[in-house]
Image (cartoon, rainbow, N blue to C red; front, side):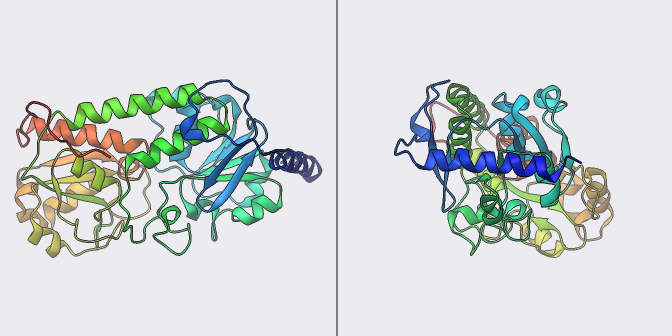
Length: 360
C-alpha cells in the first residue's frame, strides 16, 4: 500500500488542477466537439446534476464498473487507467489484451481507501450505487478530496427517475436509449481529449446496431428476459437495455407493462405470458441460483410449471452475457445475438425495403 502522505500530495495536486480549470470561462461541450488532440481545456460537462470541470486530460483514472471500463478501453485509454472494479462478466474479447495491463482493485465494490491507494486523478462509474451513497464514499466525498467524478448518463437516477443516483434497479419511467451511451462516449472522449476516437466508436456502434436491427422483422414474436434467481426470477421490465433489444427487432417484451428495471415475478406469471423465446443471461458471477446458464436451463426443464412452456419444450433459448442486459455498449451485442437467433429459427422475417425500424 502506498503511503498516505504520497496519496494526499496527489489529491492536493488534483484539487489545484480542478480549481485552476474552474477559474476559466472557456467551456467545451463534448457532444459538439469531434476534433481530436485539441488540448482545449478546461472541459466542463453537466453530469447527472453536477458540474464536472477538468483542467487537463486525466492521467490516472479509476473506473468503478465494468461498463465504464470497457468504454475507456475502447477509447484506447488503458495506459491512463490505474484501477477497475465491479465486474460481472469477462471483458469483451477485443479489449482483453488492453485490459491485461490495468490493475483490478476488486471484483465487487472497492472501499474508498482501496480507490485512493491507486492515486487516481479522476474516477468514473456506470452506476450510482458504485459511487453514490452506500457506494465507494460518495461523489461529495471525492470532491472534498479534490477528485472529480463522472457518472454514466445511462444510470437510472441520472435521469431523475429515482430520488438519488444510487439505485440502478428501480423504476425507469424514462426509457433507456443508446443515445445515452453515445453521450457517455463523447463526454469521456472530451474529458480525455480523444474526441475523434469517440466519434469513430459511436459510428461503429450505430452501424452495428442498424445492421442487426434492420436484418429482421420479429413482429408477433414475444420475449422474456431472465437475469437471475430461480425462486423468484428477476426479469426485464419495459424500459432498460432489454427494452432496446426487443424494440430493435420489432419483438415484444412480455413484461413491458412494468417500469421496474428488474421486477421479480412468479414462474406462473411467466408461463401465463407464454413468451415465444427466452433470453437468458449467462452471468459469470455465482452468487445465487440461476446466475449460470447451465443452472437456468436445468431449472427451466425440470420445474413443473416452466417445463410445460412451448419455449422450453422447443429449447428456444437466446444466450447473452449479463452485461448485455445492462445499459452499456453491450446492449448492441444483445441486439446482434437476439437478431441472429430469431433468424436461425425463422421466427423473424428479413426486413423489406427501408422500413421504419425502431432506433435507440
